[in-house]
Each structure stands twice: as structure tokens, then as C-alpha cells.
Length: 305
Image 1 (tube, rainbow, N blue to C red):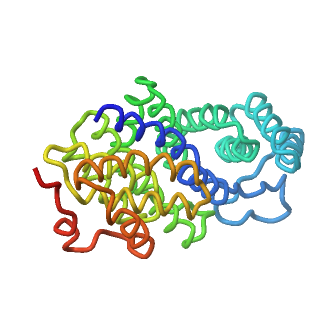
Image 2: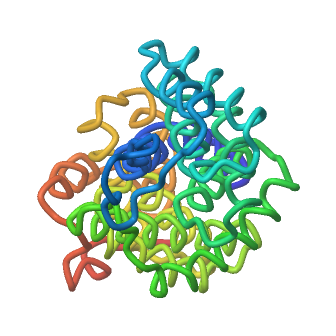
């Protein structure tokens, strides 16, 4: 059993770095979009628009913001933040820097920038979500400090989402989508914490809720499968969640993840059922379902002793 569970965790280490995290960061980059400031406008600025009074500061910000290369843009914005720490657009500059580092593929700098943004604005739910997502990656690699930080932040994030107010410069549709994404992320992370603490009952509760929000999350489906299959007695719904996670990984073009998950899942299935008969059909059928059929638990019989 220990060997199978370790195999499962190795798969999760990769899953945490792909679809869920990238979706979060891309959504943040899309929604962050700080409005361009107007330097000493001839008329009153639009409601919510921030005005930079210093021409040198304005030019530095716009130069960094309009840099095409992602790394150079991030570095330019970082320099702006350092040179103008009291700027009226400091928060927007940090959000744009965070998005630029993401576009450049530097997750370490994304996390550092997100933490600086949280220091400035403790209620910035997008930055908190990014820290949680990246800590989850580190936690699956054995980083206990990241796990502790993630668990505390996930609990706080779950409480913050219902109270989050739509930013003035965010479209309603983006706000609704991002709210759902954050809710799923924090709830899934909370479930992950419970599974890591071997509190499988609570883990299943939160992971089930996360999948109700986002049924396309391969990582949450697979973690729920582990919680089900490591419970004593084993919960056969875990076989369906295994199959679903495999299908989602295949659909997302991560065949190695799907293959490694199948080693864990099929091994557990064969041990429980006594043979691999019916496994391929189960994997195939999960492609068109978002949750196990109501009578699924009765469909898989234990091996005769």
C-alpha cells in the first residue's frame, strides 16, 4: 500500500504545476489589468482612475508597462516599484509585475511578487490564491513549511471569497469566473491539507466540494481518489475518481500523468476486485460524467476470499 500511495503523490507533484496553476495565473493576469494612469489630465479623470502627477514617474511606469519582452517588462516594473514605493499605482504595478513573471515562466518571482502585494494589500485575493497554488506545488515535494503556510492561507481564503467585492476595473463576467476559480482553489487546497494529515473524512468533504465547483480539476479528482482508496474500509468511489482523473489528464494532453496515475489506480482496483476485469470500461465511461453514478459503489465487487 505504501508503494502505491507514494506513486500517487509523485503524480500529484506534476499535476500541481500544470492546468490548475496555469489557469489561475492566466486568470489573474487577465483580470489584474491596471488602468493606465493619465498624467495631469485636462479634465477630471474617470471614476476609479489613478493619476500620476510626476512626469518622470509616469514615464517610468508606462515604459515598463509597454515593454514587450515579458522578463524585461517584469524587471522594469520591479525597478519602478523599488524607485517609487509610495506611487498611487503601486498595487497595479505589482499585479502587472506578477503577470509578467508568469508570462516569463518564473514561478519563484511570481510568488515573491504576490507576497509583496499581500504585504501592501492583505485582502488581495488573487495574490493569496497564487501563493496558495504555488505552496501546494512545494508541499507535494515535501516542503513542510510550504504545507503549513498553504493550509493557513487556504482556510483564510475560503472565508475571504464570499466577502470579496468586485474591483472597479474588472468586468462582471471575469469577477464571477475568478471567484469560482478561487473558491475551488482554496477548497481543494483545504482538502489536500486534510489528506496530508490523514484526515480522509474531512479531505473527502472539501475535495468533493471543490469538484462540484470545478469538475475538470484532475488534481482534485486524483487526490479525492487517494482519500477514498486509502480509507479503511476502502471507498469504491475512489476507483471512479481515479478513472476521471486519468481521463482529464489525457484530455489535457498529459499522457505521462495519466499513465502513472493508472499504475496506482489499476493496482488498487486489481487488489480489491481480484482482477483488472472492467477497469478499461470504467475509465472510458468516466469521460462523459462529472460525478460517480448513484449506484456506483455496488458495481465493483470485492474479490472472493
